Amino acid sequence: MLWNLNKIKQVFICEWHNMLNDRGAALIMIGAVFLYSIFYLAPFHNHIAREIPIGVINQDNSALSRNVIRALNANEMIKVPEFYDNLEQAKTAFYQNKIRAFIVIPKNFAHDIRRGKVTIVAAYLDSAYLIIYKQLTGGINEVFSAIGAKTEIQSLTKQGFKKQQAHAIKNPIDFIQIPLFNPVGSYQNYIYPMVLILVLQQTMLIGIGILFGTREERKQKDNENAAILVLGRGLAYASLYLIYALIFFLLFPLIAAYPASSNIFELLLFLIPFLLSTAFLGQTLSAVCKTRECCFFILIPSSVPFIFLSGFVWPLEAMPAAVNLFAKLIPSTSAMHGLVRLNQMNASFYMTLSDCLILWILCLFYYSFESVIYLSYGNSSYHVLQRFRLHQTSLPEL
Image (cartoon, rainbow, N blue to C red; front, top):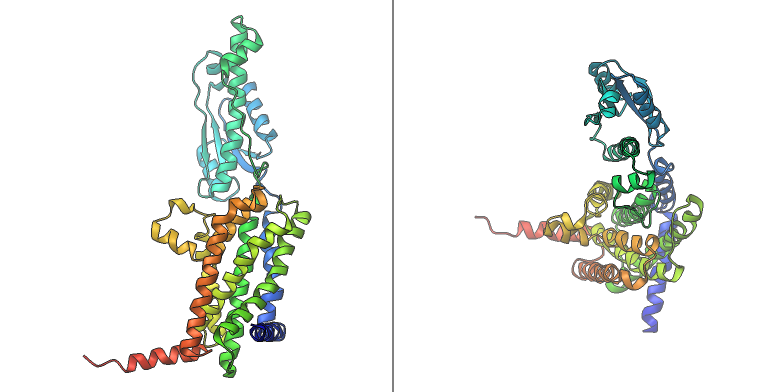
């Protein structure tokens, strides 16, 4: 047992030496990690979209319609930089991206409201961008709901009702929304765990691919036991990325004012199986990388599918069963969901056990799979591909 530990330690130290001395791998596994994490999050620094430009066609031009425009400008989500005389002008500005929506206040707007008639105000919104659409819908509804409520309460007070009674008639149920875990509705807070988990996973996978590609190009041979090689290398990759993970989820929140509530012990318990499963997955995928360039063609395009399969773009529950199962084979999927519970929702580690268990199962699966590849075909992808070609050429002709 002690002999095995010494062998694992030797492989561990050797792989650290390879990571630091291979320029391509070091560029990805050290430089790119921080570069991606900073630049991927930089666009969301303002947390939420504010002062989205909209246009107004004021066909009424009354004191009330001008009050509506002032209320729209006072809302933090909206600004009204332009006014238009007709729909054609507003549509032209809309298609030129000068505005994201336009509102039509009809003729007799104030007159109809005073007479108690239902008045239709049309809002044409850009629904191609869901974040902008959501912000605009919320801001515009807030303004017109407030104006509608004020008008109705004024009407009721004129009928003899006290102001408090008028409020109770208008709003018999006082509905209060209490946003949990992301009270300001920040998009940065929402996307933070997804971006950093993917940065950790993808740079590790690509870095491992480069290291394996280098061994292939140099025709390096490994004489060590397969299980020891896979484990020692996996521990080396995971130990480097554990440092990054602790910086991302303990230090970065203090700098970026990101809500984080987990303690370091629980964070370590959760991150270790994620990083190990990613390290073993990287070695498994690298079994088909014959050159350094090959890993880029295989691993870089995987980033986009991994984002869509994470459950943050589209809920996992709404995916087909087969797609959902495939998504669970990617370490980042369970890591993101567990980390959100642990780091944002202030859940106990017990509440993340299902995600943690999936990560440990993936860890064991990819470790065993890669060890079998080594035992069966040797340490290089060349042997895997060569054995496959020999198998093809040995097939009888029909």
